[in-house]
Image 1 (cartoon, rainbow, N blue to C red):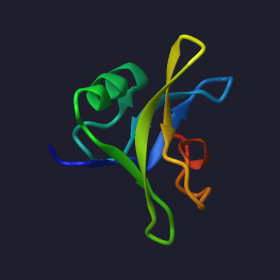
Image 2 (cartoon, one colour):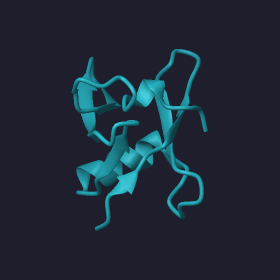
Image 3 (cartoon, rainbow, N blue to C red):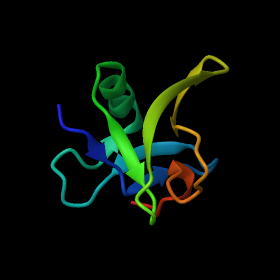
Length: 86
């Protein structure tokens, strides 16, 4: 299964990620629910910052809900919250 690069995200009024996007890719846009199912099933999503550093998108459980987050690293540019809107 090919890894899917995320270049933009959809966010709701609270700033929660609602979809993952990469313009021109057949899988994009991918809703949060579908992306969570994909990741839990082994599909990898990732982001890349301007320096080429990659961060994996993962599912986190918090307060009984599931959220999408990138693995923590030293870059803010590859955080889902900081990607442009799609």
